[in-house]
Length: 231
Image (cartoon, rainbow, N blue to C red; front, side, top):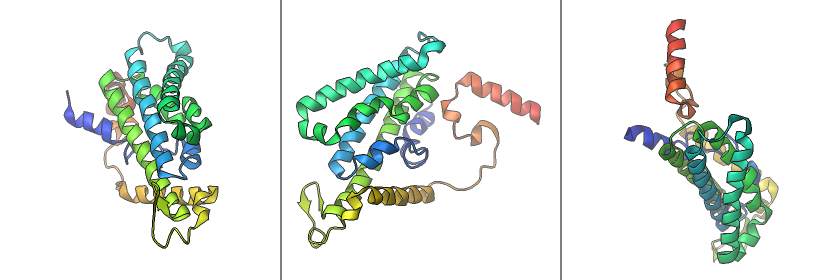
């Protein structure tokens, strides 16, 4: 098993292909629940749980699911795990469950989860699909955590209930409003863009394709043949 390839599948979602800050998916919960850092972590971990579990099941059943009904099947699988995490959070974390509200149920239609199911899990082995879901989930959780932390500190003058001197007496409440959410998101997108490698790729074909990780070996071989013919 290629350890380098496995590490790439895991790490790509943290910065290089971050679902929020690079591909700009899942914007609704990102902007809605990040008024507090704790809410961001809760939503991120719940989404990561659903993402990893749904990737695992979809990759496991990819050959058994007819192509004509694959999307409805994916949604049913995702909805099952969303229902499970919803019940668990309602029973053991009622305050967080109440704070997240309807956005917890809306994980079912989160573009990140359905997108990874269609683009990756349905075309790759189980282990790689789990790594992909875990990496994307961590990237999503970190984004929500940083956004929630910045908005909570600047907007309320506290962090996880701890008051911050001076800021707690002079909070900038705009940061816990929608405008503040868009501002912080824009700043984080700019930072991630700077962290990414902006050097133009010198190679063509799969080596420079950002979606190459979602292709099967057969698809990569077909692409290589077409590239050879073109040359």
